[in-house]
Image (cartoon, rainbow, N blue to C red):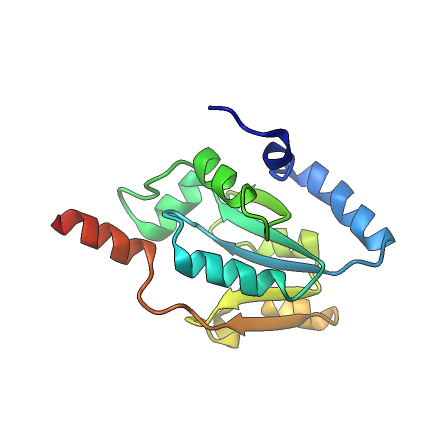
Length: 163
């Protein structure tokens, strides 16, 4: 598959991400962070990522690795491998960086990124959001965006199974 360079360069490893974050900091730019499995990309994801991107100059998306997604979602998940999911996210205009993480939660990644804004979907409460306390402690904000009703990867998979 042909992967345009602009997309490929948005998928970073931790060392590359730290370098990029330092560049943005020197330019006094703000960073928003969100995360998820993004197993089957759907309009709910697009709405959530679009809302997250509005919160800062740049949007970093933490993507659960295949092993992490499997532990969180169960057998048969993820449907799409991490490379494919990362490529699709990186192709989205509102996403500036995609970084994979192996852990069950993005806490260590959030500590590394130190975002100005931590963004999660409306199916979470502030107390449930991993990293919220840390972001608030260093003066950042936590934003809970509304979810787009009727869309979920699990729901889409269930619908496909009934066809």
